[in-house]
Image 1 (spheres, rainbow, N blue to C red):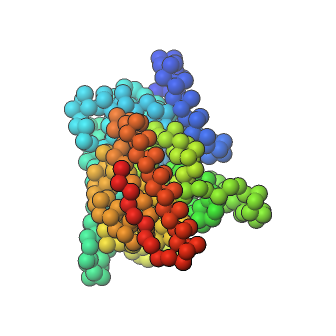
Image 2: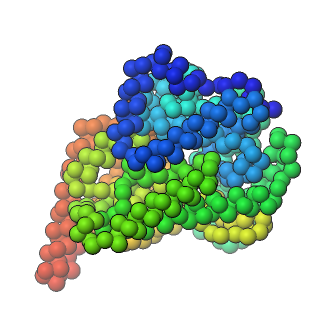
Image 3: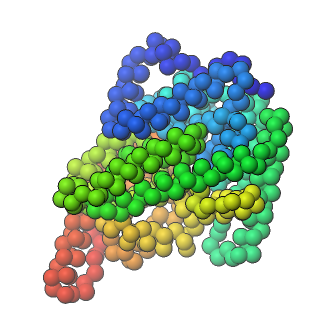
Length: 456
């Protein structure tokens, strides 16, 4: 089983039919300000995905975020990642017509905008660069990051008549103990062995343990280097910001070329080490306000983040990007690797339950010298936005910093009201400024006063 003909149109044919849309998308991508080596890395994935799509022999598998891509690579299956294509469409700022097109097909507005962007782009014949995705030979989903993922790819597999493998990750709830973890671990490990059997049946190849472990070791190294970069974001001023970081995670997330990802991260780290070896005054001005962002980025919101920076407020940490690195511990055997994967699936920082989530955020606020926290109440991802009022209340009480809840959407611009957001951001900036003044006054007076919420 393999693709006999390309499923996605070429970028050139898309340009001929949609020149205005093409130029608008490219213009919006360029304003991201991403470094050329990162753009080249992203372009490499798009280029190779198109090549795999058009190959009569190369098997292609579409997978969801959080799925263990190493298994696909071990069977020489190309990893297609439609979610990344939807993100690219978001950076091009062309998602709204695609989302509305999907809604016209019967999909509810309450559903994931990633999914609707992908469905709309495929139905309209858009290339990968603008939200499209290939018809895969097989589909893989997991609810480890999002429940919608499993139904999205189940539906795609059924629509195209292709095999589908779903991995069920148990939801860790508050109060879970070691006995519960052992049961969940056994359950996940059993599914990983089922995954091997599934891939053997679909590819006609036998599982090569040595090859798999070599790939896992590379993904662990890729994750290690990626996470090392966060140490430089603790420094004042921090290294780079969210607009860069949200794309920086592509290499560790999609894993299409782990060697290239490792090389890229090493090069970036070398630049960071050289930069911070200089005298502090040569690095740059300290941030006036250091922000933490909790939730998925606004892919269409480059201007929003740049506007924050103009006001002296820079995002220096976010759980969204840090959680992209799944392989956080070195393993040497197959059983050890499967057990560690099971632990990573159920303890990813982005899906922590409240009794671990709030202390985790509190610790990061200290580590990164955070002045204010923005919680993104994502209209496309209601579960990830659950409990945010509790987070706001607890963090304001424990960490004594202002917390702002913004109700928007990661990729659907219809949920973003520029006037309302601007007003709330201005008030948020004032609160951080007042908080800093009060802290300074306490230092000067030796008092123990506490920050008070400013009602707007």
